Amino acid sequence: MKQIQKKKEIPFSVPYIDNRETAEVVKVLKGKWITTGDETKLFENKVKEYLEVPCAVATASGTAALEISLAVKGLDAGNEVLTTAYTFASTALAAVHLGAEPVFADIQENTFNIDPVKIEEFISTHYTLTHEGLKSKKSNKLLKGIIPVHFGGQSADMDAINAIARKNNLFVVEDAAHALGASYNGRKVGQTSNLVCFSFYSNKNITTGEGGMVVTQDADLEQKIRMYGLHGISKTAVERYKTGLPFYDIVYPGYKANLTDIQAALGVVQIQKLEQITHKRNRAAAWYDECLSGVEEIVTPIIRESNYSARHLYPILLNQKLKPHRDDIILRLRSHGIYSSVHFIPIYFHTFFKNFVKEIPSLPVTEDHFYREISLPLFPALKKGEVKYVCEVLKGIIVGLK
Ligand SMILES: Cc1ncc(COP(=O)(O)O)c(C=O)c1O
Image (cartoon, rainbow, N blue to C red; front, side, top):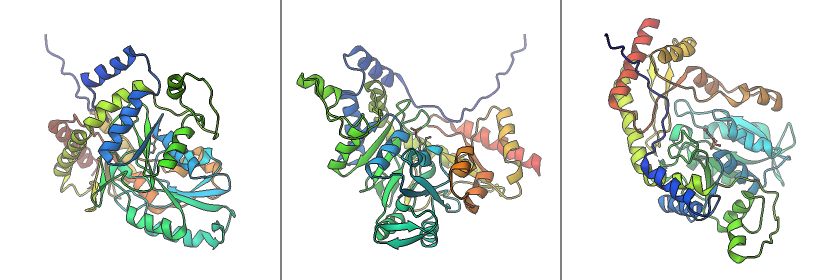
């Protein structure tokens, strides 16, 4: 009987998990404590060791890390916060949940990161400097901070962004959901006086299934972040258990956003693989660069000299001629078993934000890049032959569209 050839399937992303994670999770499950406890502390310590930072607080998600960070920075209903629209909804929703309004500056060509020049332009056009701070000419609200997103694993231009923040007395909370393992000007993303928020969602560079972390240099703020992540409670369950007395106080209007020891068990093993994971992601990105070089219809990702990217994504940009065919290309890739994605739908294209924001922005680079972008499969176990297959199929599709 003729053997039926199984169609080749290349998933978009696969977590890099093996028996070591399984064993660590089982160990926690067999122990007495499965919610936040010693394993979570161990995971926080491993992240601190890796990043060489003094403070880290594990959270239930990257979204929770952002929301807690903005809350401890005092963001509220009287405020606006400046960010990029080229991001996942969480970045902006975290501000919305606090009653604040996100406002958006455009991105740089090719890096997809918020553009410091556009930030300066936005501030000088929309705000007046008062004794209270930068006041919006339209809403009378105060601009409190900036949330840069390190798109695809490449740090935003933080020297310029930090300088703008210092000049205007704004806080900076970094959305580093994609960027654990990245560095900028020789410093690891996370090694800064800003609050930096990581995500350990299932497709992130290291994963705990769901999870996140806030890192900071400030020990007082760490305490506040920790309390905010657990109802604003003065004593954790472990502390109450250890001292024997069950009493506690609620000090802040906190969230229930703690990471469990079961999840942390995954993280403890994953963080030890991070360097290997980042290397493998960079290697796969280099294979793509090589296979797609000379294809004039495509711009491959541009990593600035100041950056070592964590290569969370491999985002290509189609040229203007192919732009109308973007969705068709995605579907054709899929018909060849190749799963791709688009990062990101601009925030203000979503129904909620269309209705929520006072004025729908017009961000030419954000919109142009959205319509031209395709994220190709990228994960540590991706093989060279698979990258070649994706590139050959993609090139074939492009030739067919000419
Ligand atoms: C840029 C960005 N920020 C924040 C998040 C939120 O992370 P989480 O899914 O862990 O809440 C994501 C997740 O996909 C993201 O891509």
